[in-house]
Length: 292
Image (cartoon, rainbow, N blue to C red):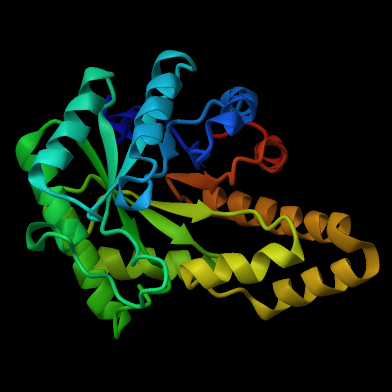
């Protein structure tokens, strides 16, 4: 079932993002995490996609097991990295054969060590190209696209980036999933600007709970998001006074407030980046009580 239809039928929701382990030896632990988080009743579960197809087979197998064995509604990530029409068609055909009806269409990141993204195929240079191809090949496929509340780091202005996002939606995207952020004002401003540009489709905020001070720099380094100074100071003070456990509590409290305020403010739902860590997600969802 298309996620946009599930959103129309349900009220506010939680959705989850999983990261396929590269090594098969890690799969049992991964599926233990999935089993633990199945109980939060996510509207859907997205599964990341290996750059250059490195873990593409893993993604397909994990998506299959989430759908058939766990009873979840999976959404597979699909990128322009190493893309051509035959390869994308084969990937989509395999998904449909499993009964999977949703993908997240992404351009993809530059290869490790490269500063800029260089398309392998000019026909798939941008996420909008991928959206148009999917919508043409599979008109009834559910398609999500990514949005950046703080603007994509490769774009010169917010307006430029938001224009590209609108183009992805106009090409056939059903809804937006945002990059992580730590200040809810960024999300609300993002939504207001997109609405002013005529976008009416859902914009789902993405939240990642900070579990340690050490993880902050790594996370911010790969996604380009910023962190409020107050939050960073609280994490540093907690870590200095009580170590990783104290910093974890600060991070969890921030994430709980962030999610609650987003839902209270009228966000359609919240997408949690799990990092394959069940406990943090369970704590956040438990703090919400029943969604309305």
